[in-house]
Length: 168
Image (cartoon, rainbow, N blue to C red):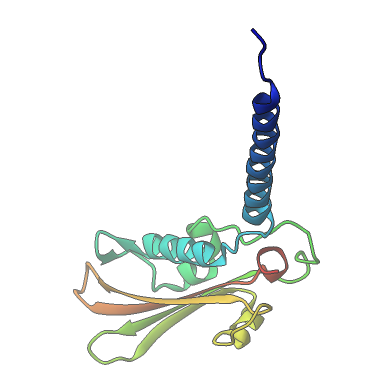
């Protein structure tokens, strides 16, 4: 009995073509997925805002001494912030973060106090859109003063720059 091997040769050619197409698709997906950096500035700004809120509040009440001058002067140490970044793209010379906290009396809308820390020059670029501008996040929260039962509105502005690393 004589076997006809022509069909096996044709199937093996199609098998290699299918393998090549699958391999090319996998390579294309990997390149498209890992080809551009993630822009995580929004996540960093959210985390920064949440950490500020946790530092200022305790179960809906304003932490003791937050409105005092000592807290204002030692804000970074009291809240355990570290605004230092890696010294890449000349970041060591200019800060990449900025936080501004405004305390308002809820009933009178009068500003009681402000805390500012970080690179204040970043605030001028808020509201501008494009690749080279920082990400700005504004949030408000309402807290009670446990001692005097005053109500406060606290506005938190968090800014993260890092445009050279995250935006391309």
